[in-house]
Image (cartoon, rainbow, N blue to C red; front, side, top):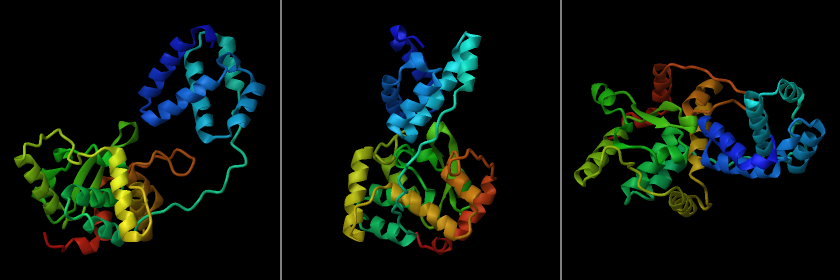
Length: 288
């Protein structure tokens, strides 16, 4: 807690945060708040309340929860541990009402995809993002064998299975409509013939560039600039509208919690796959 060894302590705290699987963006934000926090006053309730009021941001509050928890784990002073246990972190107040976020429907996602049909990478990126409910970072990490080809070859009348790695390096399975799987397979086979390696991401585009490409396409097709994340929201909205339960959508999208609470629900992949198959019926008979 002493500032004369701030860098050393910050490095240890950084290592702890990395072990929790936090994103680079979150780590950067936490580093900023660490620089603004007087660690020598970590057991001062009045200072804690004043500091939170000064920022009034959920990220600042999240940083403080992580930092105080880390201190409790590593302090060698029972007195400090008891003081930290008594600290209450105030809730954020006066927050603005959340704006209804943009999303795209299944048909809009298809229209955007077909507007980029001359570029297979972009075409498949849109559809895989939508049907998989993927974050852009998850999409750009997909490799040829992220698709479970053996499962699909053994039972091609079922939706394809795609393994993705989400936040906190948690793996989950999402599904691709039957009509889309043969097209993706032919495209990946064409990439392999061009020398594509099995551990090489198939969507070879930077995150910033993909955001620009998608934004331009959505403006052209829908008349408004949207981010690729609207595909993920669109998938969630479609699943809700088709009768999926909240915890099923949570599992499919890889959310760590529902609203502000941490609720984990273990669902069978078989159950989700059957739900997916019923949800996207019109794609089952789509010609390859």
